Image (cartoon, rainbow, N blue to C red; front, side, top):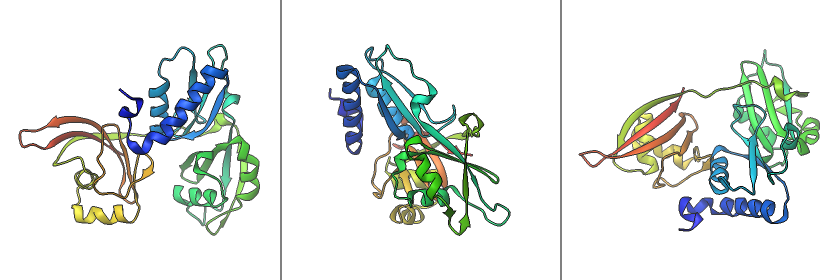
Length: 257
């Protein structure tokens, strides 16, 4: 069985990249620090490297609850330290009495600096407090150039990683049934709206599966998939139990509270 059999076709380029990192550590005794990986990419990396005795890896994104993390791969005779992940954290100061900023506002402004999403970690928001984590190699650039978000003037203050907010996700789990594992069918059941009302979300590029944009209503979901629908919230397909007597799929799903 090929390693590709365990992953979707669109995930193959990342699978190849992980294999290249792994061989670099094993064959040339190098160490490798990746960009920020989303949770699905972290799962793929963990699955491929597994328990290989010649490659050690760890994941870190600023604190124990981080969603996006950098991976550090190295030979077993080396030990990783926090400094190896090369993370920089900032507090965003802005006129919070007059302006409300969202995760989308911040991400849009940061991407507007011409940098890749892979260089940014989590964006943490709690009431008026906003913190961002970035790869240290772009820290000074972001600090110098992120001067406004929307119409709000902002100022960045570098802070220690141990001051970052601990944001924990809470999920409400329930069982649903669906006639198929198509994206539009599952979304209709999860969010309790008709398929005709789900379609505009897909067509207007508001749906992501495993942090990647999906525009095909017929996309087949699998156990472990994370779902994000802008305007409806986040959910995940935990397990596919099997078929009911009425030939429907019985699914365990989680809704983010």
